[in-house]
Image 1 (cartoon, one colour):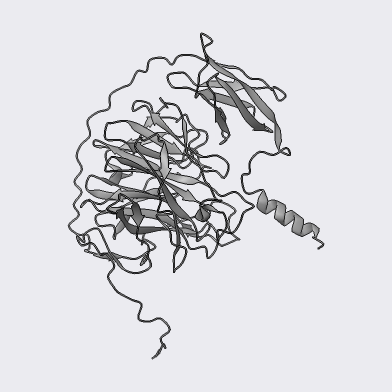
Image 2 (cartoon, rainbow, N blue to C red; image 1 turned 180 degrees about the vertical axis):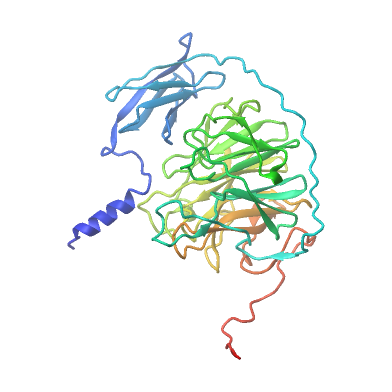
Length: 462
């Protein structure tokens, strides 16, 4: 078969979109070295990273590491609990790089002022008892990039998470220029509040939020550091910065506050590197434990993790991303999305452990959130939360893809745990009217069906 020059260029452009493991064609070399403290003692489990890149590795018991580097990977930095970050610029041909970490200085923290309670009840809001997917929210237009043809801007939202704050549900998603709030999971109001660092930036991508006392904390995906914002009045759209810049390259972050007051970060979005987990300081959000690799994909064993719209692409490695943590009955349920957000096969799987940093075991029923058919397809990179009556819900990313492959929407499904503590998400009637959080019964499907399907239409005019 003869392949034309234009065809070869197109194939190369498609393949270059994805991140592949380092190959001889694009890697300068493998660098190595040791990580020690100021006394020369080796540090086991230290993490060596390339700045603004998912490339990383951990040291062995001798403090030794091996790390593949590509062209331009000259900024190396390293982390170990209780130590200052080391930032090193290596020379292009440097093969050995030994790193010495010094003890972290004591931190001075200013106490925040007490927050005021906020009235939440709105007596004029209409009473709604059901909803349909995709959720009826004011999806933001996405005209800021070159993803669509001229005059072809589209609405989109993805990578959602939801929580309860001061007796209201808050919904956060990618690039919305704000967030949504509701009293019943049906009627959503938009609150404009941009989190752009610079005028040319996108807004927050794959956001993470958690509640501590009367304070709501919020951040987004970053390889180079974003603030962690906080607010006690998110209904105003006004936020302050708890810190100016996070320290880890945390794309698709999840912030999880455990019952004992310890804070954890789960992050990663790659078809090369696994999802990672680390304990954070409550004072400055810096890492204070070893960084653990907690979830990676096994597409040969787990067919739903294979890449492609029909899980049939064995050439391109699948993506693992969208970590989210839920604690139930003393168990930790670490959720993750795969194999790609543009596919109808996009789904969420879950690993279960007894500790927030693992080890975790693959749940026997996976993926737990899956919807490859119907009007709205896909159910990945989501978050699980409880409503004000204690019922579980799973909010997730689904695809519409009429104008562009990444034209996405937000879906909401009833979720929970069965008698064997198996996590599940009910997507079977996800395209049909569903009873919202005000309903106290078990079966949320209304039984309403589309009566106009394939029926003749008559019109009149005057």
